[in-house]
Image 1: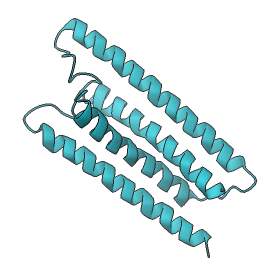
Image 2: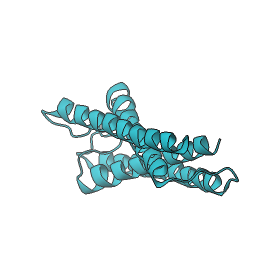
Image 3: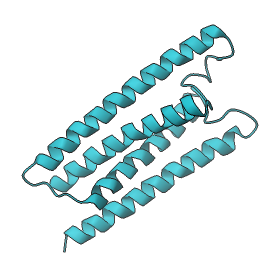
Length: 154
């Protein structure tokens, strides 16, 4: 049970951190997109205002998810049956980060069309690279967690 709790906590924490990375790097620093720029154009002041509001809601949500991940992590590491491993924790966080990328790609880019990673003539290429990065992160995290599980089962 201790291993499962640590994996869930790390994955939730990684999901929240993935959202923070996306919001800070892609929304604010690179200015590639805003949260609802696919629906509300941000070329006018009103559209920019509404996109900024939705970015704030997005950041508040990722903050809440990250806080939940930290709470779950605290409970997992202070439990009597806690199994601590830097490899296991890092792997779980990487899994959560990858799950965020996959969720963002599938739900926000493709299903809801809220925005795309980087609008323009190569929009699909950017979206696919972001999705592929999510798959790579998920696989890398799984490998780290799997090697930790094999190590602790001996």
